[in-house]
Structures are given as structure tokens and as C-alpha cells.
Amino acid sequence: MAGRIQALVAVDAGFDTHAIQSMLPDGSGVEVVGILNGLDESWRTLQETAPDLLVVACEGYSDRALYFIDSAVKQQPERPVVVLTMGSPNGFVRRVFESGADDIVTLPEPPDRIAFALEKAVARRRGAAVASGIALAPMICVLGPKGGTGKTLVSTNLAVSLAVSGHRPVLVDLDLQFGDIGLALGLRPDKTIYDLARSGGSLDADKLDAYLVKHSSGLKVLLAPTRPDQASSVTVDFLRDVFTTLRSMSDYVIVDTPPGFTPEVIAAIDASSDVCLVGMLDSLSLKNTKLGLETLELMGYNPDRISLVLNRADTRVGITHEDVEAIIGRAPEVLVPSDRQIPISINDGMPIVTREERSEAARAFQKLAETYADEEREHVAAAPEPVVSDRGGKRRFAWRS
View (cartoon, one colour):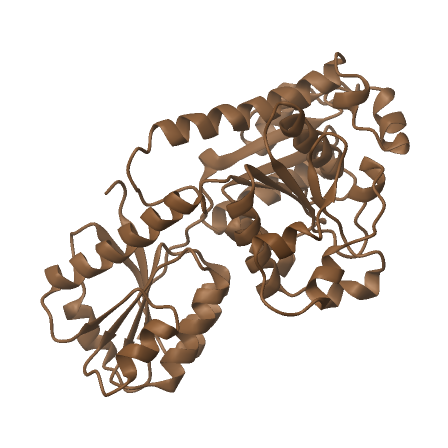
């Protein structure tokens, strides 16, 4: 199995936290990045992190543990869960599996046997994901810590470029209060993510597809609510389900985000395979772009999965491309030039990649789309067997007791 499995251990009340340390594998393919005492603390940590594997340790039958497992599975269906217990009272094993856990180990067991159970759970879940298409569809989160940098411009043109090249992308407008994807693409907001959230019931691919609006390019779009007051109906837990389902039914998911690291944006980053950070050629935007990169680093996001797009890159404002690299610490991968046709295309609801497909601006967005398409082909070709994904963000912890 390629890569070490990063496991977070959540310890229920009544279980000896120090005893669990001696039982866990050391030096195997599993790296324990944290042992958290108490399920409340563990849940708060899960909101901020993305371990490969969740281990739940409990003394015996525990309704708290069952509820925690159920919530953790709903939060991140792709992440395997293994339960370690000192006993298995009647009915507990059945309830553990009903809650969504992948395996249960009755202690004591030597560390190598526990390591085998953990690795098996990850391989089984990853193998099922590969077979069903889950986790193979890249999710590209388009960020711009400062407003007005051109996130929506990049999101729409990237998504349409992928669609016209034969892929099946879905674009999500995550600016829940002031989303403009519909206007930028000339789409009527007959169905929005608010309507989906209010529909109730379980969420599956068929149901979600009914709330997607189709663009003439073949792109499908999940539009933002039409009024700011409707945003509160779209919860973070609901968004996680939406992202997982979309990744199972499309070739690419592109998420256009509002400025800042809101809970919704953090959830999108956690669920993503790639981040596309958009900046502009001015000191305020570059400062915020640098802060955005530093925030992603603090979150443990893989820097190799972050692309930097510089919008209006040929603007003469006294800042050179060398200055940009010096300020933010890296060179942009894609430079989008200024073009008077861009605001015209936005006003007409027709992306520049279809309105003026031979323009330099259109070619920049096409290059960005080709980059993601090439990376995905390389990723699939390099993974003929189930592997542990290292594409998302990971955050390390100190030991806690």
C-alpha cells in the first residue's frame, strides 16, 4: 500500500487513554497522528482535519460511540472507521456495523494484528471507492481570499473548458449569499442548492441531478440561493454529502467560493483534491494571496495540489512578475491577461472560452483545464491498484491525554 495511513484515535470516556498507546502499531504503514481523550474533543478535531482513518476506542457497549461513528461516517463517507473495544456485549457488534464502521477489534490484540485490521479497512474502503468512481473525480476548489479577484471568472471558464473538451464537469456556486454563477453563464435560477437542501429525504445521484441546471456547453451547475436569507438552510454537513455525491457522478467538480475561510469554504477545501488560488496584480490582492497560501499550509494542505492563477496579469501597475514571486513565494502557473472582451462576455452570460475561444485569455483558461485533465490522467495511470490518497489536506497533532 503506497503511503502511510494517517490515523486519528478517538477515545470514549471510561477507556484508559494511556493503555491504548501501547496497543497501537508503531513503525508500520499506520501513523497515529493523534489520540484524543473524549468524543466531544474528537468531533471538534474532525471538523478541522482530514485523517485517512478514524479509530474509535471504547470500553464496551457505548451509545455515545455509536452516535459518534454514525456522525463521522455522514461527515466523510469515504473515510474508514475501525472500532477497538475491550468487550463486545450482545448486539454491540451489529450496532457498530449498522452505524457505518468498517471493522471491530476486540482487545487485547498485539499491535501487528491491529495494524493489519486498520490497513485492511483502508484498502477495502479505497478499493470500493475506486470501483464505484468515488474519490477518482477531482474536486477543484477555487479560492480567492480577497473579493473581486476573478474567482467566478476562473470557475466558469475552467468548467466550460472541461465541458467542451468532452468531460462531464459540475460547477457548484458556494457563494450562498451573493453567488453570480447563474448570471455569468446566462442561466435561470429555477432550481438552486437552497431548493435541494429544503427538499428533505436522502441524497443520491438521481435526486441531485434533478437540481442541476444544464449549460449549453454540457456543463451542469448547482446554483446558489436567489436570496441571502436562504443561505442559512445550507449546512456544512449537507454540503459534505453534496460534494461526495457529485464526485461519484461526474468527471470533475469545480467549486466557486466566497472570499475568506468560512466554515463552508473550509468544508470544500477538506473535500477537495485540488485548490486553485486566484490573485491579481495589486499589493492588496497579493498580500491576501500570500495569507491564503499560509492558511492552506497551516491546514496541512499538500502544496503540490495548489495551482496559482494570476488574473489581469499584464496590468501595468508597477509590479512585475518577479515581484509577485518574491511576495508570495512562488510563481503563478497560469497568467490571464486583461481583455476588454472579458467583462462583455460576463455581461452577456457567455464565457470567454466560447465567445472568443482564440483569444489569449481563453487560451489561458484552456491551459488551466488541460493541466487538470493531464494530472488526472497521470494519477489514474499511476494507480493500478487501490492506494491511500494523499491529495487532500492533512494536519498533524500533538499527543493529548
